[in-house]
Length: 294
Image (cartoon, rainbow, N blue to C red; front, side):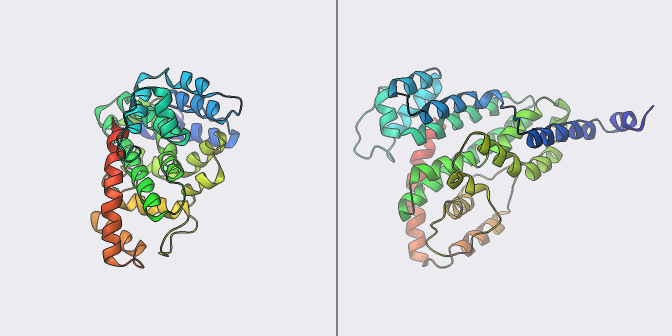
């Protein structure tokens, strides 16, 4: 019996992880990423939105293929954050106009990854996928609210960038389902995902032709230095991540560490101003989060 077979026999998880690692390395080296089913709708919506020849009817036709997404768009259009005057939207075409194409993309990703969370084989894997989904939309909602409060850029773009910041983790979770053995030790799988999600995420965003200004949220080479107000998208995303109430299952901070990082990131802001920012951001965040969760 060969040494490799002995390793397989002694540690099936390690064998599965090695196979999974080779698959991901091949994906990155060849730039031939295999998009999981959950991203199909997101990709179709992005392509039709990016096509200058597409009409609103073309976009609506793609969206209507997913009733759940259509319902979420109408719900978001009627949320307090986007509809402060209380006009009721019931038609998907009117709702898309109100929400905007950037938010349509974000919602498509939210709905797709929510479905992924329900498709994992084991209950524990579903719980982790669901936790990642909750964290992602939580951070996205904070990014939107903080950007709007500070007038530091386009809130819709901040929302979209934050939604896509977890794409590498979702991709790896989806691809891992081809190796059932990996779900038997989710802690070790989580370590692998924590190591690989950034290069995978960057490769995915490049393949999707996402603008560099958005992919910058995945660049951690120049950490936030605490200048206030933050104007760079990645700095806003960093603060949003620290402000989120739901943790990332793969990148956990203790409550004390998270609080300390947030205090350091906002040290130049007077305490009263920060309290007001948190209150305003939380109100916007809660409205958006309710709409995104459905």
